[in-house]
Image 1 (spheres, rainbow, N blue to C red):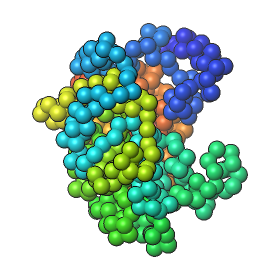
Image 2: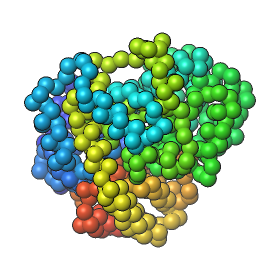
Image 3: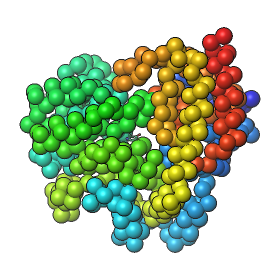
Length: 429
Ligand SMILES: *Cc1c(COP(=O)(O)O)cnc(C)c1O
């Protein structure tokens, strides 16, 4: 496989775009390669500018749960575009979208549309602070909630050194308002609440971690998080940007039977266009402007094109056959990969959530971010390079999930299994 045109484009890009990329995860830095430039995609496959074809397991980091260029979504965008792409005024589609979202997530009594997952989480936190009149938030180590200042904290307020704060553009005062707990460790959350409980506006969590690889909550963990937040009158925010719409209608909150006060959505809800949404109890949501005091706005929020694509996507997901088919696809993939990993149990740990999974390069279970960070990322990089040379496009990071879509075929899986088997043999010969 040769990547001449991609290499040429990247050489040009670095002169004009910081690091050559418009989002850091697109850089192939951690796997020791230059990024590949994509020209097109259809179903489960993408094609690069050099004419190489790949089976795509990134699916745009989640949105394309039904594959690239899904006909219903493409048609919705085309039809809507001819009628005008933005008005900055109320449109019928936003009424339809909010009702659709509620049909998937009954806990979202009122919904506001935004342009990205980052906007959704950032706005939800501001709302939580305005509603509770408290200052602090709690996040969990390794959970990603977009790139707004208050979330760019891993090490915890007290621990972050002044110099690192100075370097990354996030102020010490912001950092001091974000407390960090450990996933799957309820005692770590209780400790924070014992010290600061009356000042904590909200706890935000990915109910299933998807940004440190896939890490599932252990028995009762989310229920305990709900119990602690309720006890102290703090809001619970579920960031379901990845898990929402993923495995079934209702997201992780339905699956685990834990109802948050606010929910953030993104990725799938936009069908591949830039969209996010947040919503929750009406009484809380009504604290937003124009009715309430918490300001939140967007020139392109609820944009016709994005809503048309998102609605088309959600309507596909509403069809009774869609989720069972997705679940079957996820199972076929993870069963196959699981079998291939088995002989390497001393070196690898395979975590699965439906159509999402991660091959951790660590021979022990991964329960939290610290476990994930202990993985052999150099070996992962080698594995990535062996796979992409065989036309299998995995996320270029140990800490990202493999995204199976409904458009992947049995043949795609068979080719992928063969490549995994070959690559592992080579790595551990
Ligand atoms: C991707 C992601 C976000 C941020 O969404 P953007 O649309 O990239 O801003 C927030 N939370 C989670 C869990 C995500 O995976």
